[in-house]
Length: 284
Image 1: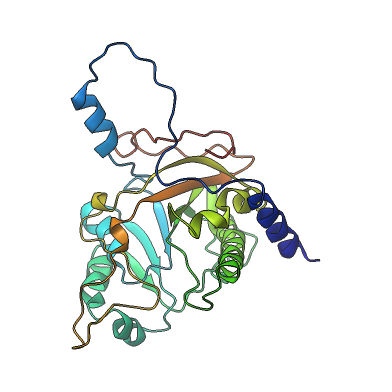
Image 2 (image 1 turned 90 degrees about the vertical axis):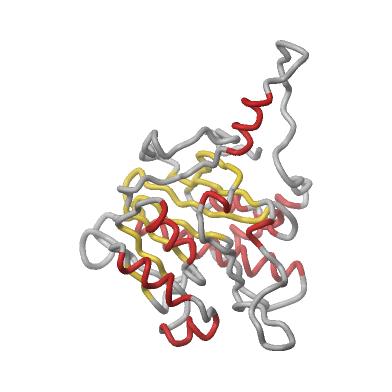
């Protein structure tokens, strides 16, 4: 049995002994100081988003789909060094899947970013300071939002295995491009079958640890829309619109760092207190 098969076997074995986490945050003991909670403080803690990067960071976006997230980083978060990758081999195929993508491409490139086509998360890079594999990685943040292999199978167990394999390969390739102290950020929906992927275990067995996790808030990225792997949804008249909106579903971002490293801090102006400061790699 190869290394990757052993890794997946351990992750799947772990899932048999743990119930999948419920949606949202786990309830925590509350120390009551008064009978009346502070509405303003409660509302602020629930609505203030976590932004896991700084404008000065060198950022790699993987599997960007319609590039709306990349465009938001450039236009609304003032990120100047963004490399956005897509699986489609050229702009024509990308536009066939996402007809409105041209505006996002223009936003990214005019803001100093770049779009790289034909990039498979399993085989990408490396982006290093030297040619070949000897140089150190240069990416401060590597972000993969809502990874999914697409509709290869309707069988849940097979889908789980396929997506675990995708993440294992992604982690391996991403670490080659990750700068010292850099972070890998993966965002998943907080529901089955995504919770069955056991992403913490996959990271742990890939020599990564979860530094923290937090609720992903799409509203923190104006203009962002969740793009389906298979492309836009059209009605019977061939018009775009309607259907399922992924940005409205509860989702969680996991921030991974190398096991032996301390993560590079995010600018205080950007970072907000996460709701899962798990310096350990324990589930939570």
